[in-house]
Image (cartoon, rainbow, N blue to C red; front, side, top):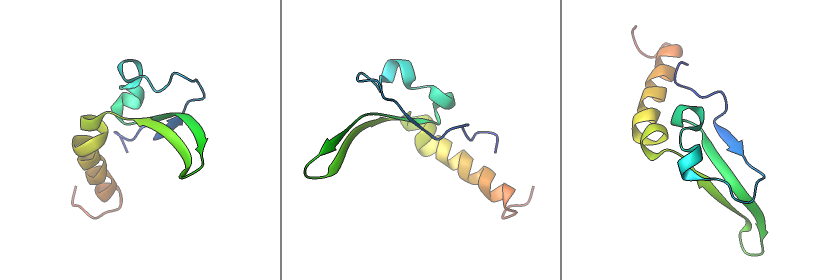
Length: 77
């Protein structure tokens, strides 16, 4: 699908990532960057996740869903 990123999720091992100003446009804004993954005694794991709210959120998800429906033959081209 044209707007689908090569990788939907990127996990960073660097202590200072994700960095919104530097990584908001990863995968043209469609990739979610996860970092600071660490153990937690209550929830098992803690992490920080960052994605572009408009591109990956409402607008991008709508376009991606339409492309998927077209690809699966659920819409007339």
